[in-house]
Length: 98
Image (cartoon, rainbow, N blue to C red):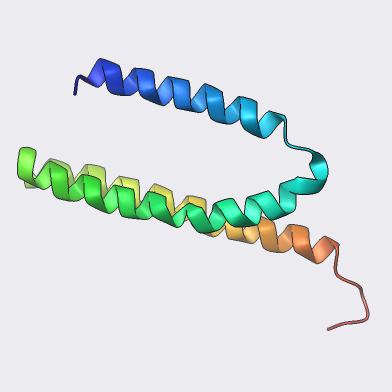
């Protein structure tokens, strides 16, 4: 696939995702976020698959750099998402439980 086509797909997916999330009611943000954090783990698998493809098609050094960066960014997304969800759910917790 041409890199230009891949960039176009990325831009369309970004705009579509933004328009979908923008229209979600406030009451659904916490459950939606929790579910999406679990699905964000798929991003890590995608990053690992990308590393495998790049190792076959290009230099292993470049694949290690790009793949390592992709895995690190995906894990930051997953960990931060669960952290934010936990913080949001604590706001609904009653103060009498410890």
